Image (cartoon, rainbow, N blue to C red; front, side, top):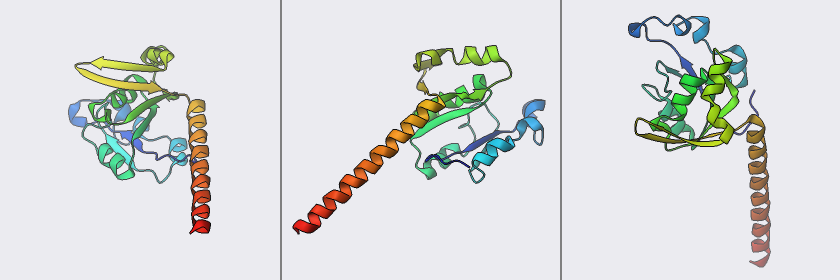
Length: 173
């Protein structure tokens, strides 16, 4: 299970049969299933079903994020060149702080994967596509872990300072 203080949402791609044949993502095929090891990390996480590359289009993703109070997206998954990047640069993602976790992404071809995330060498980039401006950051799992530890330490420090201030107020009152 996930011990990180973050919400996880599984996004499952199921092809719309009316849009043509896509055998890998047809309902009930291995390609459309969420891998058991991924499900095991967050077995109770909501599952958002999509049929387009952008995880926001025609789904309840935005509603789910809102219900969870999310303001930052850590995007990872299969089909780096398609689903991952399209969700990260979605018009709907503009209101979030967006990071792609490249060491948690993959696709059908290593060269395609590396080409898609070429900008990640810069660690921080802005995408311009069809009038859309999206700021996307890439973060490794190690960097994310360090960031979360630092945030937890800061929360503990603030709590300790607050509790100390409350004790002083109580003794002065």
